[in-house]
Image (cartoon, rainbow, N blue to C red; front, side, top):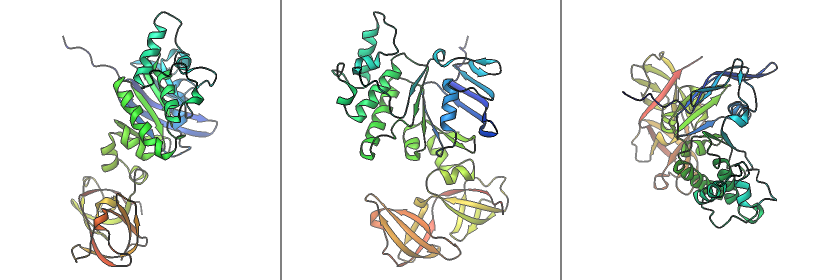
Length: 351
């Protein structure tokens, strides 16, 4: 007899939250598989923290249901308190107890039984801090403090771990390394994780699933490549990464625009008048006359590994940007020709 499928680690259905007349979340639907990392990505003030507080049980939903491992913890006539949801929570600043040692911080939420010391040692090893048992938080680096906060949250073996902007307090040079280290540790622990962030690069680089929260709704939840290459809506397309939006006239799978002929990825069901979204790395610039559209280089910004070229194109009111390799960068104020490679997504033009 075939075994039944494992229930979702988290399943939110039509979750709404209002504070008086202010609707913050308006029908959230989100499903998270066990042992995966989901990044909830949205602008500051867009409801991300409210959503995690509902999941953790710190706030009550106005309507809708939230289930953990198939068990409803939030819904009509149901609200399981936070301490019974088996959810780990790592706040932005880590919130370590400064007067306690690293080991005492990690073991703070553990029952005092014979297995406690062993579990603390396991968590120290997991985050690479063996030998730091008796050190106080102020004696270690910011990245190490973040690891201690993570170990403390993992110690009780939560069914779900929530990280609220976990790397925002770290400087840019340290952030990427700590982020990569932490995500490697989380995958090794087979943890189910929700990372709440407004950092697009962070979401795209660490998550198995990116849930884009805009206008109080999850407008798209998919793997990072799909969210970037195949945005579900124009709002998602312009929120994720850099986007060039141009008016175009569709003819089947092709659209004609000021940037030349565009190959549409999602032509089915679209009207004839559309807005096409092009990523800067899709714009190819040539100084040898190859390319369908004439343009003039306004400026070139050198970024080390690549460069951003600002281009004035006839028929477009605003300049566009092309992202090129450093050996492809044209001279400022030169005349070039450009073309668009690959397929692009388009959306109905509301005008």
